Image (cartoon, rainbow, N blue to C red; front, side, top):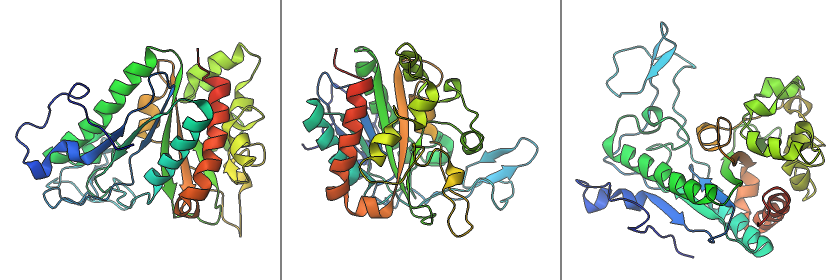
Amino acid sequence: MRPLILALFLPALAVGCSSRENYLSFVDYFPGSPDTKVILTAPHDGWIRLESIPDRRQGCYDSSTNACDWRHDCSGVHVEGKCNAVTNSDLHSSVLAKEMRKTISELTGETPHLVVSRLHRSKLDPNRFMDDAAQYNSVAERAYKTFHGIIKRVHNILAAKGPAVHFDIHGYVTHAADNWTEIGYNIRTERLNANNFTAEESSLRALAARAETRGIDFDSLVRGEDSLGRLIQEEEFRVVPSPEYPRPDVGKEEGRPGKYFRGGYITRKWGSLEKGEIDAVQIEFPQWVRDRSDYYGPKLGRAMATWIQKFYPDD
């Protein structure tokens, strides 16, 4: 299915942009079925490097407020390890998302929504607050608002139908020693390692409350028999958290600690952490999975479809 941007769906926000800089060309929206309970996003697989948008770069750090100034003409200092701007793309993550979406559709009978950012991450990072994401460039800011505006409208559609789930699809290349799939529920690494975490701090807060009424505790939902991790594990992936790898610190190889990412801005903003019935999950895949999306996408989609049918069934 070709991506659609419908005039009825989005307001005309691009007044003043040239056709080359029309914000509509920076986001792909693939509509879902009317009764789907699922949205997928891929914010970091964009390829457009528009010259009119400066490359994102390290911000100035203010030690007195522990804050970053992301303006390119900021007058503060650049401090190593502070206010860094990650600009590498999650190559082929949107391709993987499309393959998973296809399988979820086939197995559940409902096609998820999919939103993809087309700007390269060096120009825009939709998985950040806007100041960091767009660094005060007006075109990048419009693209950012478009990306999140589509998500908001889709969430409004989903919320009207009851509980739903948002999968944010990512990738990594920097810690291949672990070589595993990381499922982020907004639980900090140290909390997972200490076996000391709660539903209230997670982007699955709403699901946890519903699962509890079915006798399913939160630990099982995150890394036990009722977890998405178990289903992906059964498709022959190494995945954390899961029954096999319940904590990041069990993934040590060659003396290196296990790496893990709990999820970013999209997971916290659009999940049920603070309110609502739409949960969010960020999933990080190693590059070798994304390079073979045609093979691994259906396997992952099968695991996700099973989890969706269990916890987000059709009414």
